[in-house]
Length: 146
Image (tube, rainbow, N blue to C red; front, side):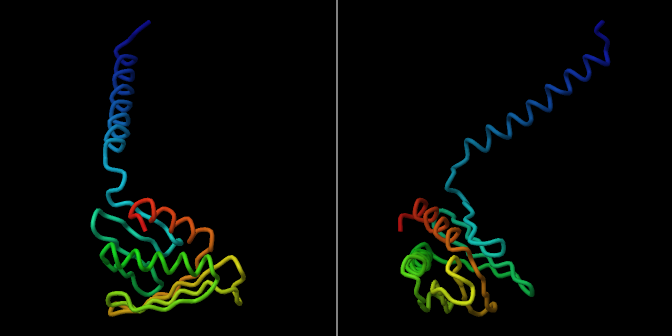
């Protein structure tokens, strides 16, 4: 037997389903490259917008948000790729930051690289899995055409 309570719950269920479906539809319609996040590690990631890339470092003592142009970000990702592939270290001054990326096997083992940068907001030292770094380079290449 259908009661008002059953009808209420049925309508409420349809309303919640409609809201969830609308959210999925809205997310599917959004530009997939707009503000795309690429993780290098749990504490270091990159947000790629249409014309700017922001490196975000979640350090123990401070959080850094470093906006860079697309060309400067390309330089950094090229350094990461070279260090991963050739297992060597590179240093560069890019923008206001001093970068050092080490892909050589050392105390940390062969499957990790070290990314260091310092600038006006402080410095960051992050150990990253080599496979995760290579994956991030691939994602960035797809978005920004290295």
